[in-house]
Image (cartoon, rainbow, N blue to C red; front, top):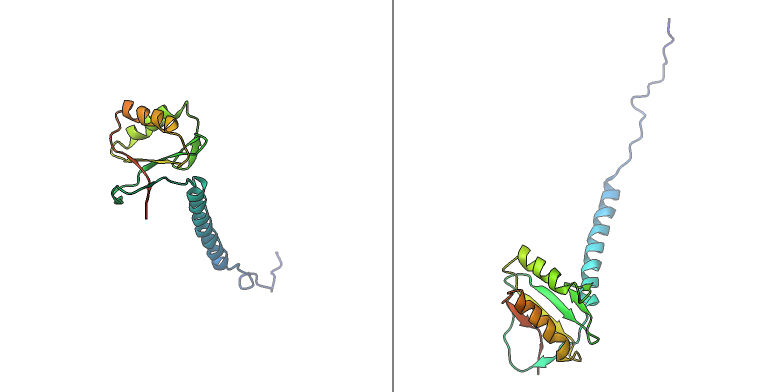
Length: 138
């Protein structure tokens, strides 16, 4: 015959409350999403040229942002890209989303000789919704 234990294990189980851990994880997720977005915005900090004419952009659709720094390096939506791969990359992005507008943010000290080949590649790729981003002159 088997001996029975008089001590019951059913009611003494300790349980871990995971609610605070879930709260901390959610706060960290929100924090990293916000910091990541700020890092993208600051990564392509370009001093824009000023202009007295132009139109205020309406936010109908998120555009593809092409950044051109003063030294001529390129970014697409904040990600650095080699100038040799630019044409293929932008054509692929335009093929995936054909109606997406493209905005060129060129540094005010960038020579037009750096901006012109980019505009020519966009024209050769048959992309027509292209705009140059400037700051409004006071």
